[in-house]
Length: 291
Image (cartoon, rainbow, N blue to C red; front, side, top):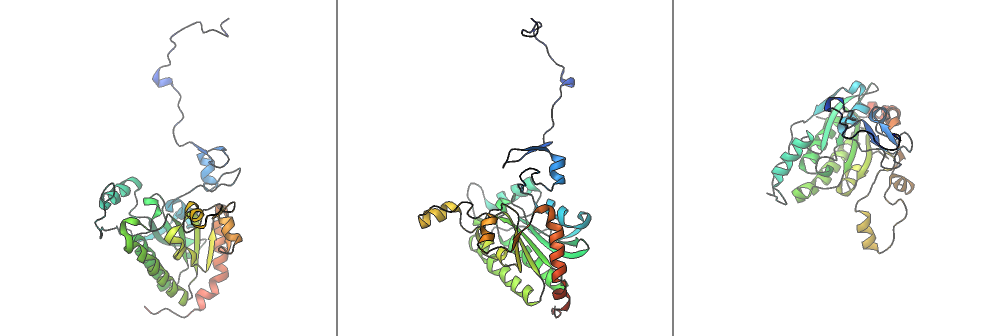
């Protein structure tokens, strides 16, 4: 009856013979529960092969997706937030910044770069949600403003990839000023005839939505992205009514006219290339910008 009862007790496998699965080899889709190996997940650009759920990715992955051979020149790499308000919550703001920089390897919540996308010059500013929720502080506004200036001076199309919880409360009014600052810079870019494409990813909310994220010549989004200003709970409590199904999803926003189109991440590079190729005469024929 050895099939049903263990004959020997105390069987111990030596440590060196134990087989364990290393962490990070598998990905489980939070939408449909499909399990795939990470190699396949990366090959599909961090989307689910079954339901096409778009996983959140950071600037490093977007740069790899967009720039040819992942080659680019990063701009303004050493900017870091000061503490003008001497803000303290559970810890002092400088301590929070330093801890987040160590944890993420980032200087702040946005990275800007210039490179080639299918042979075409492109300036990209991409936000990182891992850095204090992608919140918009003075460094985020300054780096985006400088990237816009760089695109305007060199007559290169500008792509903004937004992913943010909104303004950074630790900088209060300084943070809110970045909305006007970046919007003014984009107005100059428009006057110069240089195209601006805004890509809204999950989530894009608060002051970012209320400023540069919605000011593109083309406003586009990834499937299923959360896009809005205030959160659904706040809106529901304010208006006293239940919200429609899918409220603030990219598809809902597209249906109500706030987006031009939704693009699958696997087609993002080619669709951006086609769009910029269509806009290229405007870039070439526009008058030179005075320096």
